[in-house]
Image (cartoon, rainbow, N blue to C red):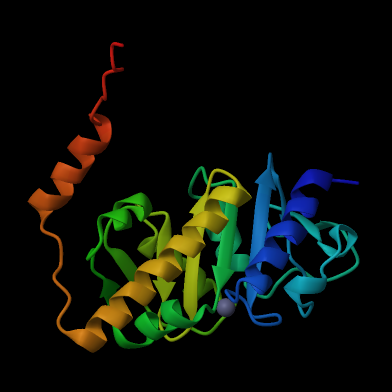
Length: 215
Ligand SMILES: [Zn+2]
């Protein structure tokens, strides 16, 4: 089977996305690239009951290469990422807190240093109808130098070197959005400054070393 491993992983992470509540029913899609081919979740199939054979394989120009079902309607967005970046996997969901932020804000400011793992401030791509080239272009622009973007009044998208990394980025994006929304209900969240974020980066490259005790 063409792209057998990628199709297996689509099912594994599709199931995990459904089980963890990131995706309800068909409200999300995943893809993984290998060479000039992309395995993508099919249109109209719940991610918790996906089988590898049901996942179509397309080329990066959008031609169907293998599979009976049509690719997800959001495939143009996935292809826009693959044709302009080195990403090997894309995860898109309508997760609750991501969608709340995407519906009310123009960006998610960094109030926790783990936002740096997604590239810092997460942009909200301008609204356009789902599945259109216009939405794909807006998302592509919002992803510049980022591993994540939110889609206005729609949801979120993350990219990675493989499906595991893209999926973990989606979990982190949802966590950051939930922290922001919950913090906002208590008071005005403090946004980390450029200097505070730079200090985090320096610390990450120079972690503390603990010497072994001499007995
Ligand atoms: Zn969507």
